[in-house]
Image (cartoon, rainbow, N blue to C red; front, side, top):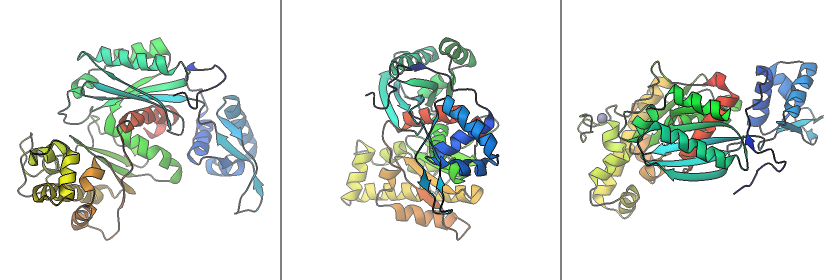
Length: 382
Ligand SMILES: [Zn+2]
């Protein structure tokens, strides 16, 4: 699967070029907007036409932009010289760790997946995880130009996943060893932070400066963006909102709470509440057939999620709420229960925009790759 691979034989490991911050910002604008006229770039960055000429020359020499055909701009009626990002110029590798399973995805500068692979770890050591990253990198660079790598997993959550301890054990010495060997950076981060970066990155050009992402799975993760920055917290532990109380007399969670969000909305809790079903999909199918227990359990999950979302909206007033992970399955046909609960808690008459993007198994790895891209291109937002 080498679609989009460079044809000039320049595949391999390539560090992102050292660009002046204004030059990098100009490139990001062109990338986010999927092409911009020269005049518009100069206006957005507040630079002169002469300065912009130098900037675009640097970007052209770095192989990052090309000039497109003149487009008629309706606002001025004059033709404009369009600049386009070369989105295949560099790729970014992301690995997602869940239990012993690692999924890898390689993305272009526009976030498109161009290559993917998977592996199963055989030991509990962090060294093996970094070795697997090296192996994926070696194979991806046979066809692509890779500029950064990120490994993501359940780093910041309370963590029932055995992967949490392993990913936390990847220390600076291991990261330094990787960078010394390959000449490009390796980052380790929380997977919900990566998913948040993936959602926020394309919106930076649109002026969306805040976002809350809620990921539903065996754990429930919260990713927060305020003032264009991903909120990390003083101890890199921000976003632990999964045990907030949402129901007066709910089931007990592993931490001993009654009626917390985890106890009603995590996929593990939903499955415990419908023991005769073997999967979340089966519970959703039972509910669709009118099974009273499955229906009640999923309605409760949707209500719990809406309640927590209402508290989040009160605290942060984000531009947008993004529901991901298993949200489609949990909320399918039950969006009304979610919305009703959200409105009951939310202390504002303003609508909160809610998005539920499509999601598949490679999405976490794609998000990890997007995190590497985000960190290379716009570290100031991180
Ligand atoms: Zn709890």
